[in-house]
Length: 560
Image 1 (spheres, rainbow, N blue to C red):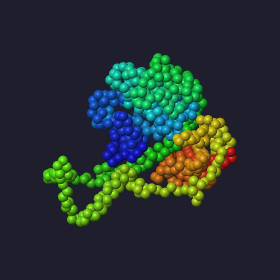
Image 2: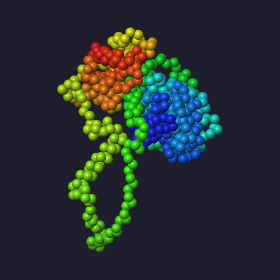
Image 3: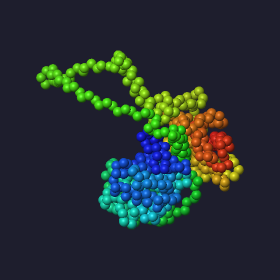
Image 4: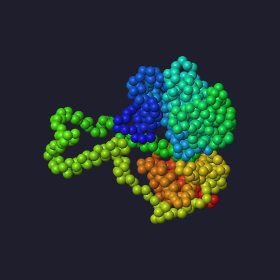
């Protein structure tokens, strides 16, 4: 997500645009605000595509397809205009990260999370195929992980399975090589079974962090998909029996979505099915969306917009034709340019050193103007002068020894060591009786607890604890925890708080949802993420409970 540039559209249809969510093969995806205040993701197609009459008819079918499959496992379509000068489609904005982002941030998913992912994707494909459609590009970047499950997005290359229309010419290859089916690779028309193959590759990637097919180029990868057996050696046995049938070369041998659900079997309800970092990213994206919306609100109003910020720049006068200068021949075969004529400086510049000063000044002003347009006035100072990072105490973090030397509680242990308010049940988690080893992205891991308490009235307490042990030769656990903690700091999105008891430092998310507060905290080598939700915890009581849960967190880890 980023700020919308000065050349971006201020409105698309009825939606006010405030930011850029991403860029795809069909166009740009913008963050928009509906007239009723809802946030939407607006897909706005490239101009060259909009000029193609054939594309417009395909896009019109895409809109129809998206509306037909909107449901529990897709992003609902809010509005669309295939006939606009620049066609667009708006769907409900979902702040969850994509599966690919989650894998890049945290590595492979736990086995039970992959089973939940498999069930959600199978149900999504069942809905899609029931509507007579084929997705044709199912992959981790088109799968969003949300608080309540999975959403499949981007039907940009979906086609009607009844063969009455085709979104591509016969033989055209559409899809991402690593997640294509053999029939797609071979240029055949993919049917519903093609999505099942892509689902199998997606699950194998989620379970292991890498593709089951190997190739050092797109062509080599496509050859492996079409002809080689998948490498499933490191896929856990309980998942392999689900994944392997999906990867059959023969489409007829692959299970249908309903059969796949039977293979997966019943799953226990999970309030927090994903690693804790997913929920942190959700909170972060909500905050970014709130910031972008608030920033747009602060500059909107009568006469606002890119054209009203600065007066128009007058066109340059036509340049005079250059005077031909004879070439000077110093010796046979050697040609050199003549000495440049002296340049007459404008009187206001005076001497050459003033010219240098003027050029430097102009460059500085232009740089500052670009920064103002790109970042907003409030952020320009910190672009050139980075904000200092406060660190409690006088001892450098590189010399701080670990305060917490063992591990974090399991959710079963948390049921005994944490005391939430009356009315909350026992905590839930992906592995209630195990401590999850979270990948750091550099070959190391650290223990993580991610537990969730809920009440019958709908209130909830989410706690994620990350304990960072010092590494031989460095960095120290305090340095690692500090780096992780500061990764969630946003100058306009978080507020530092040095008054939180029993922790060294903390900060609050500034603009969470109503009836919701988020606390990030660090105590030496322990990082804490605490989120309170519910109608019984408005501003005030919410923060009091979050502080108390931080106190209980440090006590529970110290008691192990």
